[in-house]
Image (tube, rainbow, N blue to C red; front, side, top):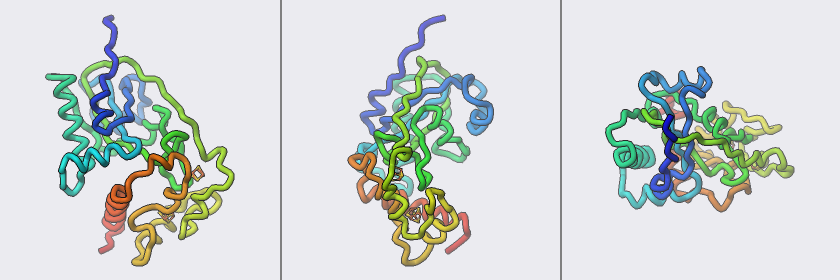
Length: 233
Ligand code: SF4
Ligand code: SF4
C-alpha cells in the first residue's frame, strides 16, 4: 500500500481555519457516521475549526457582507483549497449545511472538546474561544491524525467565575439550565442578547477571546435561531 501524504493544512490555517483533524470514515463510531448522511464513495472526513481571532479578521478582510459571512467565507476557502489540493476528487461539504453533523462528538474524538458549565467546549489552550467551521467528506486518504487533548480547565477551576457571572442563575451547581438561559436571553432587557456573560468571565484562553463584533454577530444569530425555534416574533 502506498504511503499516505500528510494533510496540507498550512493555507487553511493561514486563512483562519487553524484547527484541523482528519478521520478515517471506517474508524468512526456508526452512530456518529450516521450524522454525516450518505458517505458512499468517500474515505475520510476533514473537520475544520477556528481558534482565536484570526478567522474573523480574515472574514472582514474578504469583504463578504452576506447574512452568514463566516459560513460563506469558510465554504469559499474550503472549496478553493479542495480545488488546489484535491483537483478532480469527489467531496461533499456536510457542515455548514442542513446535515445534523455530530460536531461536538467529533471534537471529543479529536481531543478538542471538554464540556464547560455553559455548554460550549473548552480546553486549556483556547478556553472557549474556538468553534467548528466545516466538515468535509473527501474521496482521499491523508495520513492519520492523533488526538491532542489539551486538558479540561474546569477540573481545576476553584473560583468558577463563570457560574457567578450568569445573571440568570442558569448555571447553579455547575449544571446548565437551557430553559432558564433561553428565557433570560429572550427578555427585552437581557444582558445576554449579544453574548454570554459566563463565557466572557472565564479566564482561560482570554488572550484568544473573539473581538466584540464577532461575539455580537454570533450571539445575535443564535438568538434569532432561538426565536425562530420558539416561534417568537
Ligand atoms: S471559569 Fe472555570 S469552570 Fe468556568 S468555564 Fe472557565 S475554567 Fe471552566
Ligand atoms: S447566555 Fe447569559 S443566561 Fe445563558 S448561560 Fe450565558 S450568562 Fe447565563
